[in-house]
Structures are given as C-alpha cells and as structure tokens.
Image 1: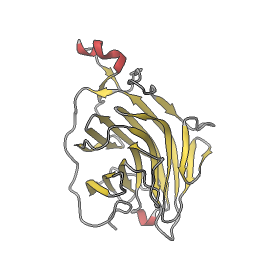
Image 2: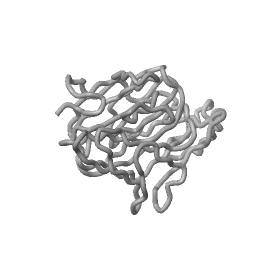
Image 3: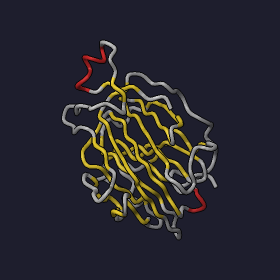
Image 4: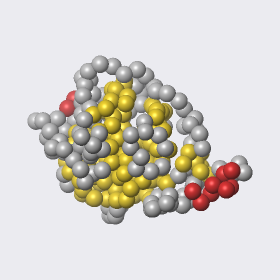
Length: 245
C-alpha cells in the first residue's frame, strides 16, 4: 500500500514548502481544543478507553468483548477528534455464519444511544467475516443512511484472523481501507467531530467474541487523496447490522 501523506498542524509551514510528513512518522500537534494522537497496544493497560455497551476487558495483548445478543456492543476512546488517521487491528469469532457487522466508529456521540446501542450520531465503517464492507451514518434521530451499502470484496478480509482497518477523516472526506487495500473514498458533510471507537453486532440467539490487538490515532490532515471511489458494487440484501447471507 502506498502511504498517505499528511500535514500535521505543527508542520504546516514545512509542508507548504514541500516537506511532507508521512502518517507513520508524523508527530502531530493537536488541533485546536483537541488532544494529540495516541497508540494503544493493550499490553496490561486500556488507558484512554471506556466501555460504552457491554464489558471490554484486557486479555493478553488484547482488549476483549463477548457480544450481547441483539445489541451493538462498543468501546470508545476518550476525547473528540475532527481530522485524523485512525487504525484498529481486530478479529471476530462467532458471528452468524460471518454476516454480522464489525465496525470502527468515528465522529460519534456515545453518550446518546438507542436501544440497540447505536451511537447517535456516528459513522460506521464496517466489514463482515463473509467478505463484505459497508459505510453507514447513524443520524441523531437514530435513522440510518447507507453511504456505501454492503459490497463484496474477494481475498481482502480474514474470516478468523486479525484485520487491519484504517480510516482517514479530512473535512468532508472519508477514506476506508482494510488490510492495506483501498475500499472506499467518499464525501459526507453531516458529522464533523466526535469520539472514535469500535463496535460489533451480535444476532439474536447467537454469540460472538471480539479481540482488539491494537489501535492508534494521529491528529493530522491529508494533503490529497490517492485512491478514489469505491472498490466493487453494492448488492441488495442485508441490513446495517447484517451483510447479505
């Protein structure tokens, strides 16, 4: 994967002269009123993370959750962010023949939730173990907007191992990758800031387990998009919580 180039707030002057800071190497200054970036390895600490729905506990090198049937269990990182690069390495077992949604959540309000556990509002950048991805917006009134419906991709998503999810949020633009593969880039102006986190849906009558191996966030703004559009074409079927079977 070609690395995205970013301008950290403190490095803007240097970037204007052509000296850019990569996402891997940037020591990003915080945006106004925000905290600088962070990295969580979950090796004996979940500092900065708080349970939202369900219980997320430390297991060796992971943050672990057992799902609740019919609910969206979720965990948040404290502080609000606007423009950032956010990545999570996670895996999911026991998810309804692979169709239940696993998601990174961004620009969300975890303090406002409906009965299922949706953050109102928020963006969800999702995958299913049976090989689909999707992008959704949950609105403040709990209605759901499919920005990119469930879309099949081949050879990208691990069914039982860890998957690396990445999102670049820059103003109205969101760019979503899994395991180094560009899946979707698009524009949506509805939500501008909020918490980041992770969520999983568990189908009624089913069980699930989720492991977060690591997560990190860099407060930064990308110079320009490298990949455009979407990989694949959305298909009919499924819901926000469940990909097509």
